[in-house]
Length: 132
Ligand code: FES
Image (spheres, rainbow, N blue to C red):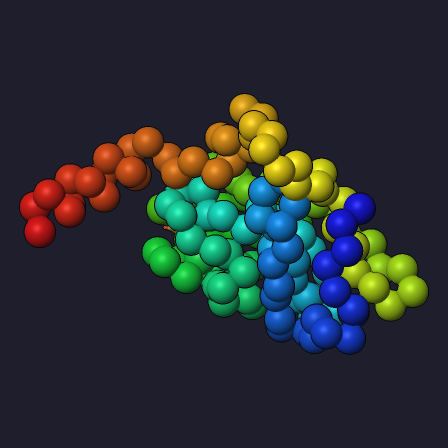
């Protein structure tokens, strides 16, 4: 378990980010707590900086929405889900059930895949940048 913050410091409608094996975003959606991978599966954007409405988080870069309950995107441009994590509150402190960061350790294949933008999307960005 990784300590996130005091529950009092995560008001409804707010989000925060912790460093676990990968960055993890923790949300207070109207009193219900959720944790997902912080990095959008479309490109490299922090979902904890997105817009939260009910149980949906909208990516700040291209507006893909992810369901905090399942991690699944509700529409394009993101195609792959983000991982979800269990959240626990004990003695007024929020914890997330995610593996800790291990300095110097290599990421697992699943962690690399979760933090790598879709290849087609990355190629699309390179193409657009080449045109501009
Ligand atoms: S980076 Fe999230 S939708 Fe593009």
